[in-house]
Image (cartoon, rainbow, N blue to C red; front, side):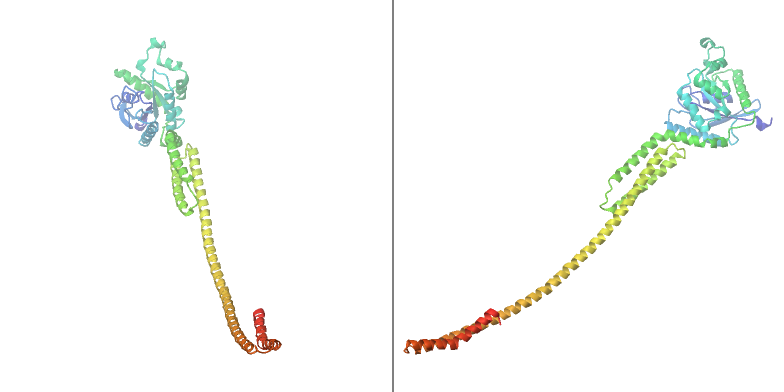
Length: 420
Protein backbone atom coordinates (compact mmCIF):
# COMPACT_ATOMS: atom_id res chain seq x y z
CA UNK A 1 0.00 0.00 0.00
CA UNK A 2 1.50 3.31 -1.09
CA UNK A 3 1.48 6.38 1.14
CA UNK A 4 -1.20 7.90 -1.04
CA UNK A 5 -3.29 4.73 -0.81
CA UNK A 6 -3.07 4.91 2.96
CA UNK A 7 -4.75 8.33 3.09
CA UNK A 8 -8.45 8.55 3.81
CA UNK A 9 -10.77 11.42 2.91
CA UNK A 10 -14.04 11.43 4.84
CA UNK A 11 -16.98 13.85 4.64
CA UNK A 12 -19.33 14.19 7.61
CA UNK A 13 -22.96 14.85 6.69
CA UNK A 14 -26.24 14.73 8.55
CA UNK A 15 -29.04 16.58 10.24
CA UNK A 16 -28.25 19.43 12.58
CA UNK A 17 -28.08 18.21 16.20
CA UNK A 18 -27.12 14.59 15.50
CA UNK A 19 -23.54 15.01 16.77
CA UNK A 20 -21.81 15.39 13.43
CA UNK A 21 -19.06 17.78 14.61
CA UNK A 22 -18.52 15.75 17.79
CA UNK A 23 -18.03 12.64 15.65
CA UNK A 24 -15.36 14.46 13.65
CA UNK A 25 -13.56 15.38 16.89
CA UNK A 26 -13.70 11.74 18.03
CA UNK A 27 -12.16 10.54 14.76
CA UNK A 28 -9.40 13.18 14.88
CA UNK A 29 -8.70 12.55 18.57
CA UNK A 30 -8.96 16.21 19.52
CA UNK A 31 -11.39 19.11 19.49
CA UNK A 32 -11.15 20.56 15.99
CA UNK A 33 -14.77 21.33 15.20
CA UNK A 34 -17.32 23.30 17.16
CA UNK A 35 -20.12 21.18 18.58
CA UNK A 36 -23.07 21.76 20.86
CA UNK A 37 -25.31 19.39 22.83
CA UNK A 38 -28.49 21.19 21.70
CA UNK A 39 -30.16 21.13 18.29
CA UNK A 40 -29.07 24.62 17.30
CA UNK A 41 -26.51 24.54 14.56
CA UNK A 42 -23.04 25.84 15.32
CA UNK A 43 -21.51 24.71 12.03
CA UNK A 44 -22.06 27.45 9.49
CA UNK A 45 -19.15 26.76 7.12
CA UNK A 46 -17.16 23.79 5.94
CA UNK A 47 -14.36 22.87 8.36
CA UNK A 48 -11.66 20.27 7.93
CA UNK A 49 -8.62 18.90 9.73
CA UNK A 50 -6.15 16.02 9.62
CA UNK A 51 -5.08 13.24 11.92
CA UNK A 52 -2.61 10.37 11.81
CA UNK A 53 -4.00 6.99 12.74
CA UNK A 54 -1.61 4.08 12.74
CA UNK A 55 0.46 5.68 10.00
CA UNK A 56 -2.51 6.66 7.86
CA UNK A 57 -3.43 10.28 7.25
CA UNK A 58 -7.11 10.87 7.77
CA UNK A 59 -8.72 14.03 6.45
CA UNK A 60 -12.10 14.75 8.00
CA UNK A 61 -14.33 17.42 6.43
CA UNK A 62 -17.20 18.61 8.61
CA UNK A 63 -20.00 19.63 6.28
CA UNK A 64 -22.83 21.98 7.21
CA UNK A 65 -25.76 20.60 9.16
CA UNK A 66 -28.89 19.96 7.14
CA UNK A 67 -32.02 21.63 8.49
CA UNK A 68 -30.31 24.59 10.16
CA UNK A 69 -32.98 26.13 12.41
CA UNK A 70 -31.45 29.63 12.20
CA UNK A 71 -32.28 29.95 8.50
CA UNK A 72 -35.30 29.78 6.25
CA UNK A 73 -35.72 26.56 4.30
CA UNK A 74 -34.52 28.02 1.01
CA UNK A 75 -31.59 29.84 2.62
CA UNK A 76 -30.56 26.73 4.55
CA UNK A 77 -30.65 24.59 1.41
CA UNK A 78 -28.74 27.16 -0.59
CA UNK A 79 -26.08 27.52 2.09
CA UNK A 80 -25.76 23.76 2.55
CA UNK A 81 -25.49 23.18 -1.19
CA UNK A 82 -22.93 25.94 -1.61
CA UNK A 83 -20.89 24.69 1.35
CA UNK A 84 -20.93 21.08 0.17
CA UNK A 85 -20.06 22.22 -3.36
CA UNK A 86 -17.05 23.95 -1.87
CA UNK A 87 -16.14 20.80 0.09
CA UNK A 88 -16.26 18.66 -3.06
CA UNK A 89 -14.32 21.20 -5.14
CA UNK A 90 -11.69 21.65 -2.40
CA UNK A 91 -11.02 17.90 -2.36
CA UNK A 92 -10.33 17.22 -6.06
CA UNK A 93 -9.38 13.57 -5.52
CA UNK A 94 -12.78 12.92 -4.01
CA UNK A 95 -13.95 11.21 -0.82
CA UNK A 96 -13.61 7.58 0.16
CA UNK A 97 -16.82 7.72 2.14
CA UNK A 98 -19.64 9.90 3.37
CA UNK A 99 -20.23 9.50 7.09
CA UNK A 100 -23.98 9.90 7.48
CA UNK A 101 -24.49 10.74 11.14
CA UNK A 102 -27.75 9.53 12.71
CA UNK A 103 -28.72 9.88 16.36
CA UNK A 104 -29.43 6.70 18.36
CA UNK A 105 -32.38 6.49 20.72
CA UNK A 106 -34.92 8.65 18.99
CA UNK A 107 -37.60 7.73 16.52
CA UNK A 108 -36.53 8.09 12.90
CA UNK A 109 -38.79 11.00 12.04
CA UNK A 110 -40.17 12.49 8.85
CA UNK A 111 -37.56 15.22 9.28
CA UNK A 112 -34.82 12.58 9.25
CA UNK A 113 -36.29 11.09 6.09
CA UNK A 114 -36.42 14.58 4.56
CA UNK A 115 -32.75 15.10 5.45
CA UNK A 116 -31.81 11.93 3.56
CA UNK A 117 -33.85 13.08 0.56
CA UNK A 118 -32.12 16.46 0.59
CA UNK A 119 -28.70 14.78 0.69
CA UNK A 120 -29.69 12.56 -2.24
CA UNK A 121 -30.70 15.62 -4.20
CA UNK A 122 -27.37 17.25 -3.37
CA UNK A 123 -25.08 14.28 -4.02
CA UNK A 124 -27.15 12.10 -6.34
CA UNK A 125 -29.73 9.38 -5.87
CA UNK A 126 -27.20 6.55 -5.56
CA UNK A 127 -24.71 8.16 -3.17
CA UNK A 128 -26.13 6.42 -0.04
CA UNK A 129 -25.92 2.99 -1.62
CA UNK A 130 -22.44 3.48 -3.08
CA UNK A 131 -20.58 5.78 -0.70
CA UNK A 132 -22.34 6.08 2.68
CA UNK A 133 -21.48 4.66 6.07
CA UNK A 134 -24.10 5.10 8.79
CA UNK A 135 -22.57 6.50 11.98
CA UNK A 136 -24.90 5.96 14.94
CA UNK A 137 -24.12 8.55 17.64
CA UNK A 138 -25.21 8.88 21.29
CA UNK A 139 -24.64 5.16 21.66
CA UNK A 140 -23.76 5.79 25.32
CA UNK A 141 -27.55 6.01 25.80
CA UNK A 142 -27.96 2.34 24.89
CA UNK A 143 -29.11 0.28 27.90
CA UNK A 144 -29.38 -3.48 27.24
CA UNK A 145 -31.50 -4.05 30.32
CA UNK A 146 -33.97 -1.27 29.54
CA UNK A 147 -34.28 -2.17 25.87
CA UNK A 148 -34.10 -5.93 26.52
CA UNK A 149 -31.73 -6.15 23.56
CA UNK A 150 -28.24 -7.52 24.04
CA UNK A 151 -26.27 -5.31 21.62
CA UNK A 152 -26.46 -2.33 19.34
CA UNK A 153 -26.19 -4.65 16.36
CA UNK A 154 -29.29 -6.50 17.58
CA UNK A 155 -31.04 -3.17 18.08
CA UNK A 156 -30.32 -2.26 14.44
CA UNK A 157 -31.62 -5.65 13.29
CA UNK A 158 -34.84 -5.13 15.27
CA UNK A 159 -35.64 -1.79 13.64
CA UNK A 160 -38.49 -1.39 11.15
CA UNK A 161 -39.68 1.33 8.82
CA UNK A 162 -37.52 4.10 7.42
CA UNK A 163 -34.44 3.35 9.52
CA UNK A 164 -34.45 -0.23 8.29
CA UNK A 165 -34.73 0.97 4.69
CA UNK A 166 -31.80 3.33 5.27
CA UNK A 167 -29.57 0.67 6.85
CA UNK A 168 -30.36 -1.71 3.99
CA UNK A 169 -29.63 1.00 1.42
CA UNK A 170 -26.25 1.51 3.12
CA UNK A 171 -25.58 -2.18 2.70
CA UNK A 172 -25.51 -2.67 6.49
CA UNK A 173 -22.45 -0.41 6.83
CA UNK A 174 -23.09 0.89 10.36
CA UNK A 175 -20.63 1.92 13.06
CA UNK A 176 -21.42 2.98 16.63
CA UNK A 177 -19.93 6.06 18.28
CA UNK A 178 -19.89 7.30 21.84
CA UNK A 179 -18.51 10.81 21.46
CA UNK A 180 -18.50 11.33 25.24
CA UNK A 181 -16.16 8.42 25.83
CA UNK A 182 -13.04 9.42 27.79
CA UNK A 183 -11.42 6.01 27.41
CA UNK A 184 -8.77 6.36 24.67
CA UNK A 185 -8.74 2.63 24.02
CA UNK A 186 -12.48 2.61 23.36
CA UNK A 187 -12.17 5.73 21.20
CA UNK A 188 -9.44 4.14 19.07
CA UNK A 189 -11.51 0.97 18.77
CA UNK A 190 -14.38 3.04 17.38
CA UNK A 191 -12.05 4.69 14.88
CA UNK A 192 -10.53 1.33 13.92
CA UNK A 193 -13.97 -0.08 13.18
CA UNK A 194 -14.79 2.98 11.09
CA UNK A 195 -11.58 2.73 9.05
CA UNK A 196 -12.16 -0.99 8.51
CA UNK A 197 -15.64 -0.26 7.16
CA UNK A 198 -14.26 2.51 4.92
CA UNK A 199 -11.61 0.16 3.54
CA UNK A 200 -14.25 -2.44 2.77
CA UNK A 201 -16.33 0.19 0.98
CA UNK A 202 -13.43 1.51 -1.07
CA UNK A 203 -11.93 -1.86 -1.95
CA UNK A 204 -12.42 -1.07 -5.64
CA UNK A 205 -10.62 2.24 -5.24
CA UNK A 206 -13.71 4.30 -6.06
CA UNK A 207 -14.14 7.74 -4.61
CA UNK A 208 -17.00 10.17 -4.75
CA UNK A 209 -15.51 12.88 -6.94
CA UNK A 210 -16.42 16.17 -8.52
CA UNK A 211 -17.66 14.26 -11.57
CA UNK A 212 -20.27 12.50 -9.45
CA UNK A 213 -21.24 15.84 -7.95
CA UNK A 214 -21.67 17.46 -11.36
CA UNK A 215 -23.96 14.63 -12.45
CA UNK A 216 -26.29 15.52 -9.58
CA UNK A 217 -26.41 19.21 -10.52
CA UNK A 218 -29.91 18.97 -12.01
CA UNK A 219 -31.34 17.49 -8.81
CA UNK A 220 -29.67 20.15 -6.68
CA UNK A 221 -31.08 22.90 -8.85
CA UNK A 222 -34.51 21.30 -8.67
CA UNK A 223 -34.35 21.06 -4.88
CA UNK A 224 -33.30 24.70 -4.42
CA UNK A 225 -35.93 25.95 -6.85
CA UNK A 226 -38.63 23.92 -5.07
CA UNK A 227 -37.57 25.46 -1.77
CA UNK A 228 -37.81 28.95 -3.27
CA UNK A 229 -41.05 28.22 -5.14
CA UNK A 230 -43.44 30.01 -2.71
CA UNK A 231 -41.33 33.17 -2.77
CA UNK A 232 -40.83 33.04 -6.55
CA UNK A 233 -44.55 32.41 -7.09
CA UNK A 234 -45.52 35.36 -4.90
CA UNK A 235 -43.09 37.73 -6.64
CA UNK A 236 -44.21 36.49 -10.06
CA UNK A 237 -47.91 36.85 -9.30
CA UNK A 238 -47.34 40.35 -7.94
CA UNK A 239 -45.58 41.59 -11.07
CA UNK A 240 -47.95 39.68 -13.38
CA UNK A 241 -50.94 41.23 -11.61
CA UNK A 242 -49.56 44.74 -12.01
CA UNK A 243 -48.86 44.16 -15.70
CA UNK A 244 -52.37 42.80 -16.28
CA UNK A 245 -53.90 45.72 -14.37
CA UNK A 246 -52.05 48.19 -16.60
CA UNK A 247 -53.00 46.14 -19.66
CA UNK A 248 -56.68 46.34 -18.74
CA UNK A 249 -56.58 50.14 -18.66
CA UNK A 250 -55.33 50.47 -22.25
CA UNK A 251 -57.66 52.54 -24.44
CA UNK A 252 -57.30 52.79 -28.21
CA UNK A 253 -58.68 56.32 -28.56
CA UNK A 254 -55.08 57.59 -28.50
CA UNK A 255 -53.16 54.65 -30.04
CA UNK A 256 -49.80 56.39 -30.33
CA UNK A 257 -49.71 57.10 -26.59
CA UNK A 258 -50.95 53.59 -25.77
CA UNK A 259 -48.27 51.98 -27.95
CA UNK A 260 -45.58 53.60 -25.78
CA UNK A 261 -47.35 52.34 -22.65
CA UNK A 262 -47.65 48.84 -24.11
CA UNK A 263 -43.98 48.75 -25.10
CA UNK A 264 -43.13 49.50 -21.47
CA UNK A 265 -45.38 46.62 -20.37
CA UNK A 266 -43.73 44.36 -22.94
CA UNK A 267 -40.31 45.16 -21.50
CA UNK A 268 -41.58 44.29 -18.01
CA UNK A 269 -43.15 41.04 -19.25
CA UNK A 270 -39.92 40.06 -21.04
CA UNK A 271 -37.92 40.76 -17.87
CA UNK A 272 -40.37 38.65 -15.85
CA UNK A 273 -40.05 35.71 -18.28
CA UNK A 274 -36.26 35.97 -18.25
CA UNK A 275 -36.07 36.08 -14.45
CA UNK A 276 -38.32 33.04 -14.01
CA UNK A 277 -36.33 31.02 -16.56
CA UNK A 278 -33.06 31.96 -14.87
CA UNK A 279 -34.46 30.97 -11.49
CA UNK A 280 -35.78 27.68 -12.90
CA UNK A 281 -32.28 26.59 -14.05
CA UNK A 282 -33.88 24.06 -16.45
CA UNK A 283 -35.31 22.18 -13.46
CA UNK A 284 -38.86 22.50 -14.86
CA UNK A 285 -40.14 23.27 -11.37
CA UNK A 286 -41.32 26.68 -12.56
CA UNK A 287 -42.88 25.43 -15.80
CA UNK A 288 -46.35 26.69 -14.88
CA UNK A 289 -45.02 30.14 -13.97
CA UNK A 290 -42.93 30.27 -17.16
CA UNK A 291 -45.98 29.40 -19.26
CA UNK A 292 -48.09 32.02 -17.45
CA UNK A 293 -45.49 34.75 -17.94
CA UNK A 294 -45.08 33.83 -21.62
CA UNK A 295 -48.86 34.00 -22.04
CA UNK A 296 -48.86 37.49 -20.52
CA UNK A 297 -46.04 38.50 -22.88
CA UNK A 298 -48.00 37.22 -25.89
CA UNK A 299 -51.07 39.10 -24.67
CA UNK A 300 -49.06 42.33 -24.46
CA UNK A 301 -47.61 41.73 -27.95
CA UNK A 302 -51.13 41.14 -29.28
CA UNK A 303 -52.26 44.41 -27.71
CA UNK A 304 -49.31 46.22 -29.31
CA UNK A 305 -50.29 44.77 -32.70
CA UNK A 306 -53.90 45.88 -32.15
CA UNK A 307 -52.76 49.36 -31.09
CA UNK A 308 -50.56 49.65 -34.18
CA UNK A 309 -53.53 48.64 -36.36
CA UNK A 310 -55.65 51.22 -34.55
CA UNK A 311 -52.96 53.85 -35.16
CA UNK A 312 -52.90 53.05 -38.87
CA UNK A 313 -56.69 53.35 -39.01
CA UNK A 314 -56.58 56.55 -36.96
CA UNK A 315 -53.90 58.07 -39.21
CA UNK A 316 -55.78 57.06 -42.36
CA UNK A 317 -59.01 58.51 -40.98
CA UNK A 318 -57.29 61.78 -40.06
CA UNK A 319 -55.87 61.99 -43.59
CA UNK A 320 -59.28 61.29 -45.06
CA UNK A 321 -60.93 63.88 -42.82
CA UNK A 322 -58.39 66.49 -43.89
CA UNK A 323 -59.11 65.63 -47.53
CA UNK A 324 -62.84 65.79 -46.84
CA UNK A 325 -62.48 69.22 -45.23
CA UNK A 326 -60.50 70.40 -48.24
CA UNK A 327 -63.16 69.11 -50.64
CA UNK A 328 -65.92 70.71 -48.61
CA UNK A 329 -64.06 74.03 -48.58
CA UNK A 330 -63.52 73.79 -52.33
CA UNK A 331 -67.18 72.96 -52.86
CA UNK A 332 -68.29 75.92 -50.72
CA UNK A 333 -65.85 78.19 -52.51
CA UNK A 334 -67.05 77.10 -55.94
CA UNK A 335 -70.65 77.38 -54.82
CA UNK A 336 -70.00 80.89 -53.58
CA UNK A 337 -68.28 81.83 -56.83
CA UNK A 338 -71.14 80.35 -58.82
CA UNK A 339 -73.68 82.17 -56.68
CA UNK A 340 -71.78 85.42 -57.05
CA UNK A 341 -71.79 85.02 -60.82
CA UNK A 342 -75.48 84.21 -60.87
CA UNK A 343 -76.18 87.09 -58.51
CA UNK A 344 -74.31 89.44 -60.84
CA UNK A 345 -76.39 88.25 -63.78
CA UNK A 346 -79.60 88.74 -61.82
CA UNK A 347 -78.43 92.14 -60.68
CA UNK A 348 -77.76 93.07 -64.30
CA UNK A 349 -81.24 91.94 -65.31
CA UNK A 350 -82.77 93.84 -62.41
CA UNK A 351 -80.88 96.97 -63.37
CA UNK A 352 -82.00 96.56 -66.99
CA UNK A 353 -85.63 96.18 -65.94
CA UNK A 354 -85.29 99.16 -63.60
CA UNK A 355 -83.87 101.20 -66.45
CA UNK A 356 -86.67 100.17 -68.78
CA UNK A 357 -89.23 100.88 -66.07
CA UNK A 358 -87.83 104.35 -65.54
CA UNK A 359 -87.98 104.98 -69.26
CA UNK A 360 -91.62 103.90 -69.31
CA UNK A 361 -92.38 106.09 -66.32
CA UNK A 362 -90.76 108.99 -68.10
CA UNK A 363 -92.78 108.16 -71.20
CA UNK A 364 -95.95 108.01 -69.17
CA UNK A 365 -95.07 111.38 -67.67
CA UNK A 366 -94.57 112.83 -71.09
CA UNK A 367 -97.87 111.37 -72.29
CA UNK A 368 -99.61 112.71 -69.25
CA UNK A 369 -98.20 116.14 -69.91
CA UNK A 370 -99.28 115.92 -73.52
CA UNK A 371 -102.72 114.80 -72.42
CA UNK A 372 -102.95 117.74 -70.11
CA UNK A 373 -101.83 120.06 -72.89
CA UNK A 374 -104.34 118.56 -75.31
CA UNK A 375 -107.04 118.75 -72.67
CA UNK A 376 -106.28 122.38 -72.21
CA UNK A 377 -106.60 122.87 -75.97
CA UNK A 378 -109.94 121.12 -75.94
CA UNK A 379 -111.00 123.18 -72.95
CA UNK A 380 -110.12 126.33 -74.84
CA UNK A 381 -112.10 125.23 -77.90
CA UNK A 382 -114.94 124.30 -75.63
CA UNK A 383 -114.96 127.69 -74.13
CA UNK A 384 -114.92 129.25 -77.58
CA UNK A 385 -117.79 127.07 -78.69
CA UNK A 386 -120.14 127.91 -75.89
CA UNK A 387 -122.12 130.15 -78.09
CA UNK A 388 -122.29 127.60 -80.90
CA UNK A 389 -125.32 125.38 -81.10
CA UNK A 390 -125.42 122.25 -79.15
CA UNK A 391 -125.16 120.00 -82.15
CA UNK A 392 -122.34 121.94 -83.54
CA UNK A 393 -120.74 121.82 -80.13
CA UNK A 394 -120.87 118.09 -79.96
CA UNK A 395 -119.46 117.72 -83.39
CA UNK A 396 -116.75 120.15 -82.60
CA UNK A 397 -115.81 118.39 -79.31
CA UNK A 398 -115.94 114.96 -80.96
CA UNK A 399 -113.79 116.08 -83.76
CA UNK A 400 -111.27 117.57 -81.37
CA UNK A 401 -111.16 114.46 -79.30
CA UNK A 402 -110.68 112.15 -82.23
CA UNK A 403 -108.03 114.36 -83.65
CA UNK A 404 -105.94 115.05 -80.57
CA UNK A 405 -106.71 112.51 -77.82
CA UNK A 406 -107.38 109.15 -79.49
CA UNK A 407 -103.88 108.62 -80.97
CA UNK A 408 -102.22 109.39 -77.66
CA UNK A 409 -104.41 106.98 -75.70
CA UNK A 410 -103.85 104.14 -78.17
CA UNK A 411 -100.10 104.61 -78.07
CA UNK A 412 -100.10 104.59 -74.26
CA UNK A 413 -102.17 101.45 -74.09
CA UNK A 414 -99.87 99.64 -76.52
CA UNK A 415 -96.76 100.44 -74.39
CA UNK A 416 -98.38 99.55 -71.11
CA UNK A 417 -99.96 96.34 -72.31
CA UNK A 418 -97.35 95.07 -74.80
CA UNK A 419 -94.33 96.93 -73.37
CA UNK A 420 -93.06 98.08 -76.73
